[in-house]
Image (tube, rainbow, N blue to C red; front, side):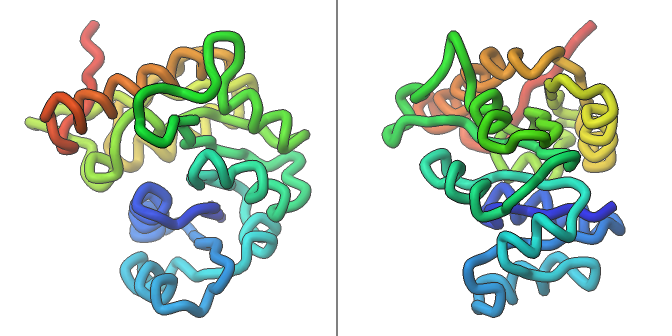
Length: 209
């Protein structure tokens, strides 16, 4: 599968690297694809990856992962161009700068706003409820970490579930895209426990039935 990463920081870089190492063709976007930082990302990800501009990354990919800071998200999507028909995986939490809360929520979500900014894209909310160290290895104490996802397109959600399962997550469908109104505050719980309550970052949630 051809996967484009818009925002190759810790989160996007970790996911893209794992998918590239798993055999997918991954493109990491950058304003300067030839920068030392991007060369390092591509070298770690391996031969199935490359760096490119935002527009090239979007145009050459079937699946787009948006993992930019919230404040940069609108501009990144505008630079990506027409994403009609593409699967757009939204990893973003609209956090306040001090991590004390969310800028949007309750009656809408970052995911729903992103769907409005990228008309025609098949948006799926996923990979937003844990930190990147767990993404590198989502098995804790021998058990897979749960990864909730939501969206309005069944086929797109199936693809995202498969990508999550390949990484080792227990992928669980949380419903329509409007469920991001719950998943984004849920992410804030992980963040507050990790950084304010001393849990650290090497843990995740588990679903028991």
